[in-house]
Image (cartoon, rainbow, N blue to C red; front, side):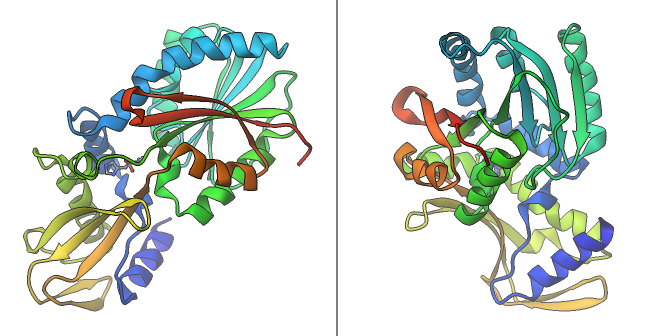
Length: 312
Ligand code: AVI
């Protein structure tokens, strides 16, 4: 992991448009900052999706009854803190087992133990793994349903999102379902405020990647010489986060020196926003079919149920 982090960071800083992968935001401090972001007034996706989920789960219960599905094997991808699955489990009584997959094993283990206290009768399994690749699930008689909330799919480029959807179909198999949270296109100011909040929590979250590089890769980034930038790229339909150098400067990481011009940026994250119909093109191309769509008031967030009917 250390070596992969080092190679990825060095390769990213050698690019003409310097870039770092957003997956490296989430060290212990970065995960804490992300939890703080979720509590911000400006960051609407977290609370909006959370308030939609009880209704979604109640309607799913009726939908599955109509489909004669009476038991579900629920599989959460990139499970993290397991906040979003609680309202689903509370309402969707036909879930017979829950499997949480995440790259960070330690965080997931603690969250699963807490979940087990709230749902003592539910078999819960925490599996450490890269959920973006196909995974072998333990055989089950229950109908598999994947769960990928939070619009984390928006942090993938459309090509990567398509790969994720295809791989999820392979993992979940024939006649499976996928419940997805997808953030929508909306007023530009609302989007930019969500990623550049007035308390500067997102700025600290973004800059923390430099602190991590300093600590783990013997870097000497001076955080006061970089500013957080979040802009909506309308053409590509995505929020872009960058760290912009305030001066001409040079920075050393793992013994290699990098030059920065004043105003030059490191691109740290994309967060794509999709109209439901636009997202449907990815869904169809990946072999899924959208069965249900839930929109929050003013269509500021969407949750959708996908179904794969045919064999993979
Ligand atoms: C995790 N992911 C869905 C968040 C998002 O909204 O793209 C990450 C984030 N970045 C800045 N604020 C939140």
